[in-house]
Amino acid sequence: MPRAGLNLDAVVDAAVVIADADGLDSLSFAKLAMELGVRAPSLYNHVECLGSLKAHLTSRALSLLLDATRDAMAGIAGREALAAFGRTQRDFAKAHPGLWSAFKLPIAQWSDAAQRTADSYVALALAIMRGYGLAGDDAIHATRVVRASLQGFIDLEVGGGFGLKQKVDLSFDTLLSMLHVSLSQYPVTTGHKQLRAAK
Amino acid sequence: MPRAGLNLDAVVDAAVVIADADGLDSLSFAKLAMELGVRAPSLYNHVECLGSLKAHLTSRALSLLLDATRDAMAGIAGREALAAFGRTQRDFAKAHPGLWSAFKLPIAQWSDAAQRTADSYVALALAIMRGYGLAGDDAIHATRVVRASLQGFIDLEVGGGFGLKQKVDLSFDTLLSMLHVSLSQYPVTTGHKQLRAAK
DNA sequence: CAAATAAGCTAATACGCATAGTAGAGATGT
DNA sequence: ACATCTCTACTATGCGTATTAGCTTATTTG
Image 1: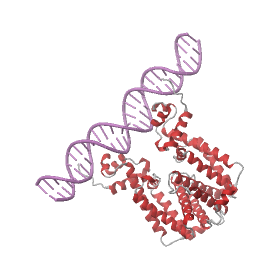
Image 2 (image 1 turned 120 degrees about the vertical axis):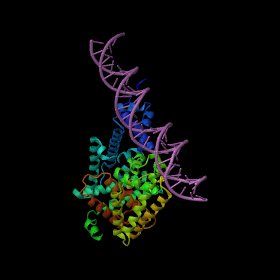
Image 3 (image 1 turned 90 degrees about the vertical axis):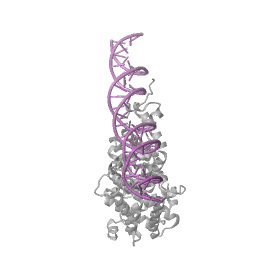
Image 4 (image 1 turned 180 degrees about the vertical axis):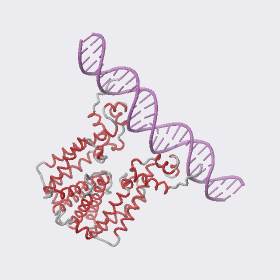
């Protein structure tokens, strides 16, 4: 019985392929072992359990997305930076649907490294906010809105939530435009109190 | 062996309780049967399979949300209608986290009834868009943005994606305000071409 | 009251993750 | 070259899922 020469990286690589092809939920040790030409229990020599493997997938996903976003945002600011940020996220989700859904695992299960990578990613978003003149609590609220709307849109698109495929690109441009418009006027016309009073 | 007197509604009721309490993913026939005082295989007399049960949960969720949203939106329009639409969705997700995640099941598995209910719900959203003077493709794109951003925000909140709990209410108001501002100016300042040219 | 319907059961299959213990390949040291 | 040691991959096993088959019997229907 010759050795397969596995290591953690090779296992995670194969898991990425399976997750992207069949969906993260259908990633199993049986399938993964088959892919690697090995029996399922052998994987426990490289990974503690299935949950741990998925945590590694989350780390991998965060690293890839962070690097791609840094590249895309290099040297630009304002509306262009916002668009680059959003488009990179969307492109990543389309290229790696399995890794994309790895972001939705319980944050409590993320590794420390993943948490740090996520912090760096949030810092990129906050940099965009600075370009719109936002800081402090304003920047936090605005970042949450940007993050939530991008993630919601991409989830819907990847999950097949939009009926007509053709015009989704236009809808995404609309999202970016609406974010840009409202960020440009924040917090002047937003006024939580006004909205609450109107309610 | 006395009969338990089950039927589809009773089974779905119990499934709702379990899904909301423990999460949709941990809804199992074993747990459900235990809750109903019955053995697991007996459930197949009322439901085809686990996937079918979850489809019923989706239908139930859509009906509840549609009714609540109709009530909340009765007699109001514009900014107030938008806020009522969004707040009803958020309140529903908090009250029924299990049912909320049932919305994310593959749409292909939805029943026809669920699909029709969803159409009615989209009609409510389109009515809001009319209040902002939007129709046709503009309304479709704007509806997608509203739907995506609300869903993304609520997913993040329910999933624990926001660090500090305290200010999430403010962030949600920010989201509603930003949507209102950008919808009010749509499509004047949005201009897909402008953004694309800038890119 | 008899017969048909259907709700509950037990038993069994198939597949998932996970652990324990074993054998041997590859590395290391003499 | 040989002996030893480590660690990878294995077989065997257990437990928890969903699901099916076939039986029993409560309930309903004619």
